[in-house]
Length: 456
Image (tube, rainbow, N blue to C red):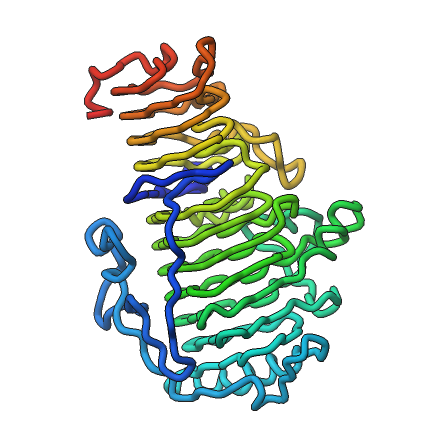
């Protein structure tokens, strides 16, 4: 049956080292990688593309617990390497380079089956509207290079809504294309020597704040229906909407990124894999006005119809700050979403000053239109949460399932929540599971405390 198809896939989220959290920091505080890379010869600390002859990746068997290295093969050299200046680019921060970028990509597309191409963006400020990438391509930002998103909305054209959303996420109809976009691509690298891509999103945030937005805002980077993608070693800032959005993609690595937006900037999620599989997000620092990392799979009946789950996703060694999401670890769904959320592993997290350390709950009754199906109840089972320490928490965990579709098979092991008032109690409804070594004592719904194999 259609409603039984996966709207939310089996997502495995591993955190291999404890992490400190500030506000809503979920993961490890680390020194962000500073890869010193030549613009002519890319040398990565891990190979990117699948080894020839390899089959579908198995993250459990092929994934190195410390790095993304084991799941990818060697990064091929690009036959053609050129500079944006070769296509008339002017890096003064005022001259539009939209035509230069589009001319460069149009030319380099000819090499997608002839050894690939690399476009170097030199030091300077390069103002541009949206442009589309090509396959077997590297966009390389040299040290001191800054790509600036145009503040002319006409340079962010309107495109069709995603089929798994049925409409723009914020407004009916189409949506603005992302600043850097690609569809149906393979072997794409966006990297550099700590360069910056700045979406200059304030004009878009003001449209949202003033309620004068006509179409859904564009992302900073969106790749669709693509595979073998690396985004690394850059700073992305001030995205109009979500910052990095791989959708209907596979074999994606986002590594060593710094993602920044003002803490009041609306919906500026850091990294949002959407209906994608085999994704690794690691060693990133994110400050945003919304989620640091949010795993998605379409919207209500449109996501159910498309039946593209998000699966085999690993998120680790991520740190950051956001004031708007009050929960440290959250799984959110609702009636109308359908599908399932299953086989989730979350472990080894230390957080501090997080309002609600753990929250599994219903959403905000947010639907694309009046054709959503209230009988499309998601199935939630097999959620394993272990080795969690929360300092200075203000509220106990909230576990609020859906009537008629309880959250089942929850396991909490070695969870310590400090700083709660003596009368703070877990809030639980429509949930079942077990616990082992949890403080303070959980709710009766998790009654098999230490006696069930589900938390062994």
